[in-house]
Amino acid sequence: MLGLDKILGGIFGVIDKVVPDKDLAQKIKFDVQSQAHSGEMKELDAAMKIIVAEAQGGAWLQRSWRPLTMLTFTGLIVAKWLGMTAPGITEQIELELFAIIKIGLGGYVFGRSAEKVATAWKAK
Image 1 (cartoon, rainbow, N blue to C red):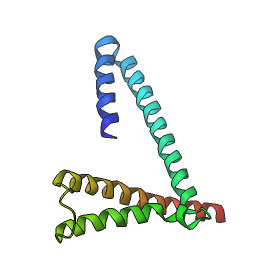
Image 2 (image 1 turned 90 degrees about the horizontal axis):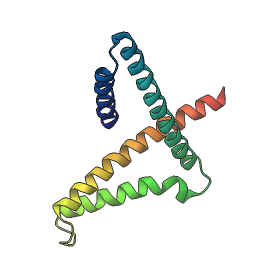
Image 3 (image 1 turned 135 degrees about the vertical axis):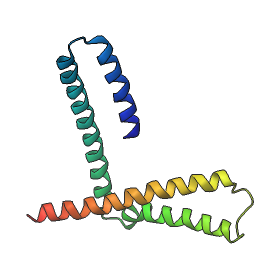
Image 4 (image 1 turned 135 degrees about the horizontal axis):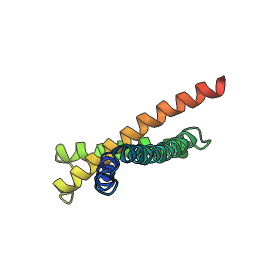
């Protein structure tokens, strides 16, 4: 989202310089912003559908691979803190594992919420 805001800010700056009519410039900026957010929502909806499909899949591994991956990465970090890991896991790798865990947990929370919404929606 932050990247989208930066891109839109640049586009809006160009619109302000190129379009002398302020009302027309505002309308163009509104149209650009609406289309950008519409595309962002479509991308979010597609990601939600993938996560819901995985969560509702028939195979145990299909439903469980994300939580298993997060537990593995968390275990690697805890093992590093306790001094029970290979010295090859540097601070940089540890920070990357933290980033993956944050993204994974965010996706898991979002996916579980989407799954509950989809289940409630299907029940209607």
